[in-house]
Image (cartoon, rainbow, N blue to C red; front, side):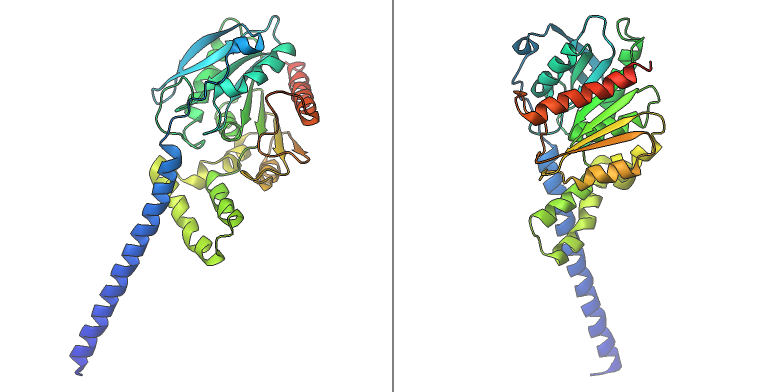
Amino acid sequence: MSEKGLKRRKFKWWVILIIIFLILFVLLQGSALWMINQMANVRVEKLENTPGDYDLVSETVTFKSRDGLLLKGWYTKAPDAKGLVIILHGLHGIDASSLLSHAKFLYDAGYSSVALDMRAHGRSEGEVIGFAYEEPKDILPVVDWAKNNQDTKSQPVFLLGISMGGASAIRAASEKDNVDGVISVSAFASVENVMEQGMEIMEMPEILQIIYKPFIKWAFALKYKVLPSRNSPVFDIQKIESTPIFIIHGDKDQQIPVENAYTLHEKSKAISEIWVVPDAKHMVYKDDGTTENDKEYRERIIEFLNTLSSHN
């Protein structure tokens, strides 16, 4: 074969290899984006409880997210309240109605609360869950409301979030210097890392994990128009300098491994406290409040709030 023919053949093979690479790239990136869309493009309407189920007298309050969604929450006003706690749910399995038991024990301890339905959950608008990339836009207007509301403007304001709610609380507090404390329960340090940890838990072959990990990050970047590493709790917690943070996590959490809690605590520059709950899974607190962990959970949260409230 002539030298010209060899060059042609080599060029042809290079073209074929590039086409194969591009097809594989599109397939992998497309599958990662499809997977995230399947989890994100949903609404969660549990609506499983009302304040009356807990003998609470609450009113519905409405807010506008920073990108224009109508949000709703239950405002429960305690007499002579020591402070206001904004209660933030996780994704998929729960909404604000699922955490009204928190509003109850907070009320009994002298704290008002707003149990907020964040975007695409409960009674609020939205068709896409934000994985804590978007939810700070929902929380910050509630903080502004609390700081301007006649009943609450002289009170300390706290954020108490579960799972994605805990991650969102950390991210929101990094943007506000007037949040007086954060309680983060079962939160992820970064959502893409949890996806990667999920691949390990599923025992995906290591070579596939290595190949697939960057596509997960790029999918989140495409979906939410963010840089995942700079729009994450583990990055934002380093910007919080004066807001005390209480990190709670079960050591048997299979959804969000406890390593996330240790990472957040290690990276925190503010005064942070960590409680790793023995034998507890993702939902540390049970709705009926009957287990020993539930009792200690309530007591530790109230102690944290009381300590901060006494300084205001």
